[in-house]
Length: 568
Image 1 (cartoon, rainbow, N blue to C red):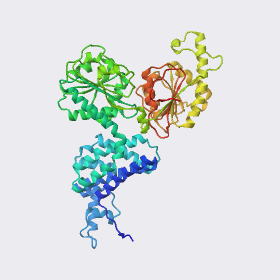
Image 2: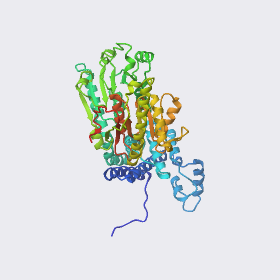
Image 3: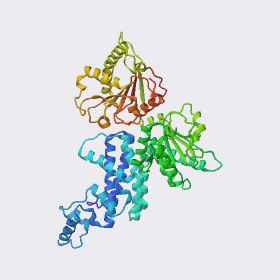
Image 4: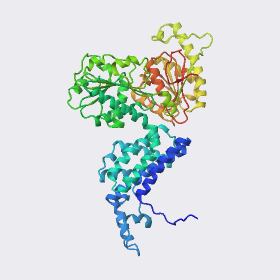
């Protein structure tokens, strides 16, 4: 017969340790059983563990700080001590013997710990603070409302919180037993989660760091190498982690880091990511003046720009910079003329065909994570390709490049007949697709005139999709004819799961740098570049709950040589 006690007394740190362990145990069980309820429990337990840890920090400084109203707690403790047998009551006894006081709410708890204890990791906009705030939003929605979990995002969040949280607790907590026993135990339990999200990134970052150190040796080549990591598997996170670690571990490298892409829209997107997610304080170079000013700076800077911005001069600097090229679709040999004494490194998720032509500029392949591996790990979704021939009898399929200026009456008639036939096929196809997987779709057309014409034809077939206001309707066309405010408004609607806007007609340029995991289908009605093909593949492979695959519907008979595409 098992002996049981009638009372269980658990201290703050014991409670904290149990909640954190339980949270990461629940994550591991979810990973094995694919039970979404376990992921919900994981978020709630980890959030609870963080709350208890922060309360412990406040208690170690001043026990009254754990109460919402400190003055009221002082008064209530005085009253409690006047009761018989409670003369020696402590501050925390108020929770057991007084129902008129409340502990501090979570948001105020974090702010109080940051300010009163001067913990830099918890101040507004600090990396760890941002992650904790995001987790709190998920937890609150789970407890009080309904929500749909982005599994990759939640898993990443739980993973990225763990190490900085435990490092902060190792520094701030005074209890030696907790630091010696509990923290290593929590780390051990969380290993499956860390492995799932961070293993590839960790390995690729370390390989890039070692290769950079080797390249810095006078007797070595200035070609650091190539990190090839499938799009949708966190390539930008790998890049940011590499830069962050390089600056910490390589003090002798005291010069600029240039990050180059081949589209300015992508440069802006990457610049914002590095600053908002990693606080790397990168600078976006928009023109010649920005470049010259940055080069003259004595302090090392992280500089982000498009390669096209350097076409105005053959030589930029003799300094030994680090030049990182990101997702280049071509090899730009002029880079070596721009930076003759620099190191060269390529981070890419684009298949390099043939890869040998990149070796001369960047060196050998030093890290790899294929799209097939990402699909196997459920980080990315496979993509199906459906080639479609739908033209009705008597309809001529015109060539969009011949129709840039619609002055030919017969050509205009042919194009209208084509778009009418296209609209009929699209509406039927998207209706069926929405029955397979709820999400969003994009129709790519060749020019602004077609966005309007095709929209009108689809509305004639599906008047219930129409909305007379920007905030209503299931289908919209978007182009540079609209104001920037209106375009942003429509794109924000399109990113929302709750919004009725589910089909967008646009030209190819709007998809460059655009990220929306809700998109499950893209209809290509005109010729597009290989670069955009890779952008589409990256967009469709983004993971989202209920998304089994991405679908490309090709009306143009293009050659798709993408490893992301599943052969049917």
